[in-house]
Image (cartoon, rainbow, N blue to C red; front, side):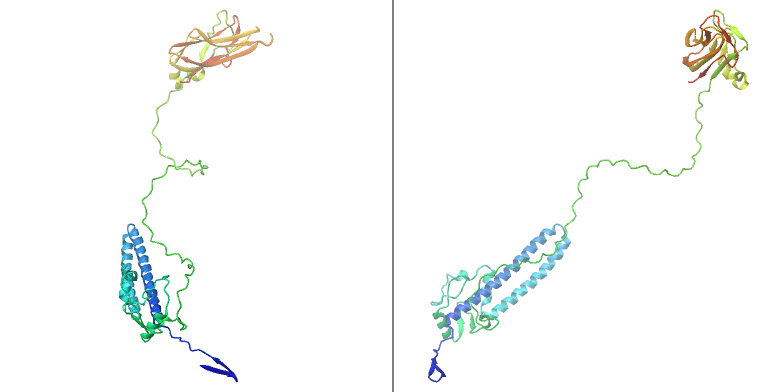
Length: 382
């Protein structure tokens, strides 16, 4: 065929047979079949693995929460039924394009697959009945001739036919599909799944050890004064007070002589009162100046003597049962200063009928026996 574009010039265009051969059609059909089978098989396996994983997780959670697991298992059964329906729909959809495709899909699901048929007898001259990815087979002129002889139809070993120019052989723009491209990079990770079911609360742990005591806090404010309580029962009567006081019985000076004994004693005026008669009976004043104590106990004894003497030293002592117990000594300031007093006292345990006496320890001294200046006494402490 020639076409003239300008006077004297022509371009000859050779007729090119653009129709694909029968062998190419068979190879293309085989690739499409394998591609559809792989897509379906991968889709079914992904769904199956997903549900198996979910079922395993839920069965493990069943030990913690039986009620929630039963509900989820029921939901899984419903979902499984829906999935089986989807698989049947997908089989019918693929079977509408490939005659006998349902048997091929069943073989893949049950683990048989086309590879088990590689050992079976195949039609001579057809090397592309089943194409696996990377098998290295190519569309040859023989396959194109077989497709042309079939009147535009492609026939595979399984007997499936598909008309020439089927939509599965073309892309969205109507162009004929080419070979499988390279595997793309992995996609980004998906969003995290929903949180799992909360487990059952575990048993309470062992109680911990007692902690250290804290520091003492500040004292609080004093509370209001409480009401007065009831009057208690009277207690036991304590020991009665026991005391005695003896004073000088003369307002004139007395010469003690060589013995030093003092005989001029008398009971104090308060001991002569009736209310102290019982107390006075616990002591007796003898004519020799000694005092007898009738009740034993712990006593405080005291004595004082007023001196009217110009001697350099003077003093007296308290005798208990003839033994000196306490004493007192003084010195005269000057011969003209004759008045001087001396006091002594102490605690002693006395037995019943103990005798108390006051004696001047220096001979021939002059003393004043006035009641408020010279005296002796004792008080029971216990």
